[in-house]
Image 1 (tube, rainbow, N blue to C red):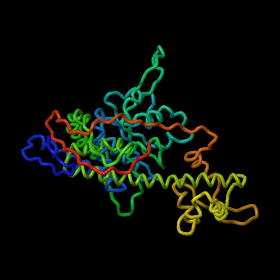
Image 2: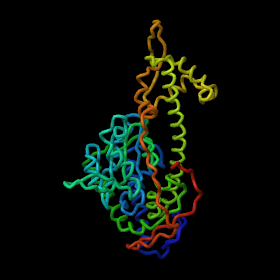
Image 3: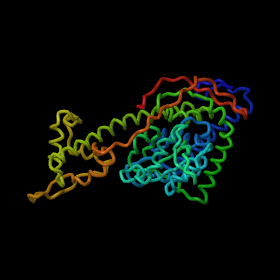
Image 4: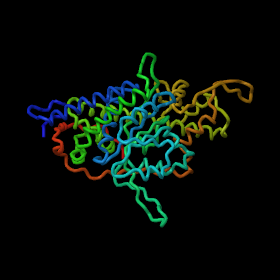
Length: 420
């Protein structure tokens, strides 16, 4: 055992083969990070660190208590979400694309050594018309934590059978996924590349062999460390569900040592804090959708409402935040900006009196209302509780069977809490 403070400055003198293995982990994660960064432009350096550690964590899945989701989301098409999945497919442990896979097949494939699920167009699984995908949706919600099996009637004798659901999963889609997924995910918010941002084109003939070589080295490094990783409880900079989600990534960073323990915790704090801000903004936008629906209902669900008329009614509501939004209250620019992520924008509309004005058409809101604030008269979709098992006392990382010498993590100040 080599003592350390999690910053990569642990004393390695005389460590022998163990220190060499740990050093290999640093170099390997650096190589993986560089390879991912060549093919995709991620929104931040912290996001690139997170994706790198998430990929590595898939190679110790059998040792983990939680299987964090990687939510790769963007406001529109063309943000690089599918390319991220392409790179993941060639680097994660036992990838399984689920775009056209039957949920029954996924249930039967997951076992003691589960695959890594890669789900493209995940927004279609959780939309209001995705009832036929209920089984897959339930699996993705339940599979974040061990011992959450799905019970199904199976076999010619129709016996109740428990199917394991525990598996790491990356989900790519347009717009935010449901809270039951986002709260259990490392969230990567993709954007379109700016002019001048260059990437290496992904070509199977040379990209796949390169990435497979990194993947095979990850397996060789991490597979022997599953047993000590299973008994290890790292010091986390965040609490509650955020800690459950980020713990596997921090474990990998601590196994590597070097600069990775500090880098992982920096990414964890930055990205969880960013999501707290995003949650607040999402709550405001959802409130706006509900209030606009109320205005349309008060106006008899007219085909369209003039922007100025809609703003006037919103601002008059004394219990709403719109009169104090910004410096002088909600205006047309603010309104358009808040609704942009939902694909809603004003347009010229000719009214019955023959006059034309900028207005919002009611039919633009129907999809957003169904997704983000469904009619209260309809039963809400149940959300998972996600109770975490009792954590063992934090302690030293047991010696690895190969003699590698992972770093003991540092102490840390508790970060932002995520609601359970």
